[in-house]
Length: 386
Image 1 (tube, rainbow, N blue to C red):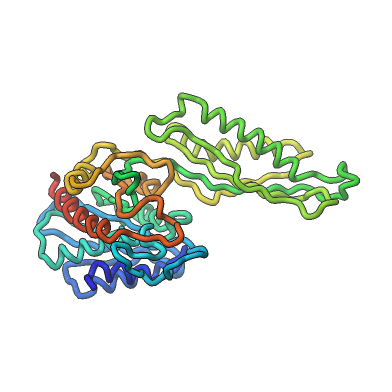
Image 2: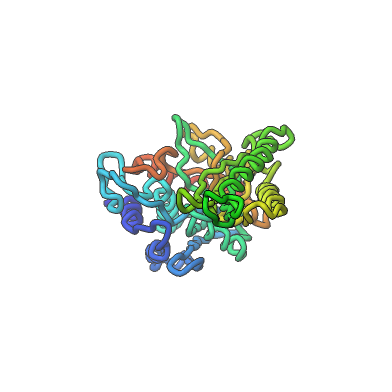
């Protein structure tokens, strides 16, 4: 089996489902242990969850080009016709959890660095791989690397999420922010025949939801808060749980929601809106007491639509139909937009966007191999400043 296929298959065989990235990081470090020209560094985020940096230095000064891929995958779910953690190859496809999202992107970067080292490639600057933990929930690994200053010298970062869609290979330069939050409500229990003796947490929640959604709808419909690329800030109340039995006034409620934000009405303002709504509710002693828990706060990210990195990508992938697009979802752009330096950012990687998190997830092998080539050529162009 060719090296690049073996690397991808072995990555798939490590079941890093929302955890266990340490094993993936150790595997990656092992790929480079015999290369004096390549430096690896493991940075812990949580017990058993390690980020990794891989650095290949060029022969002369130049820019630092990096590919940043997350090492975790989502749960498998039921109904697979191919084992999810074997990396079965059939024809032009390799099947397995994470083949598309995004271990093919990770493997492409690793294969690129190994190939360049073996070839003794003449290039300027440095070429890095950044492996992060916890992207699927919280993006803590990327946050730790940004806040720890590990990436302060990087000039360009490619995030190889699967971006092939409707016959085009998308180059994503912007993404919405995302706030996942939980509202906890504490009421007072009473018999349902005497509701005046209790405080109905569900009724408080119902009123809170209606009032708060009206405030978010006003933001959504305000043209001053519209972003030309990403659209508008949105809020969805997605879960409500509460009460204990038919004949009791409910003394607790839990509300969950997700706000998607744009720079014009950013995540900080959306959080402030939620907190103000909670505070207003709590001014009335007849209401259940509400508290806001923030489960995840990611900022909207908008990088340059025309940058040296995107120009290098278009040149390296000129045989592809590469279109520069925004993303209405979110990814690690939301972390890297906060790097202190002027850094070029783009999301581009192998695989169909629609295959992410699917049963019988797969990657097309020729698309994976094309990405290795594109990353190589892109790195050469970018580090030289072309």
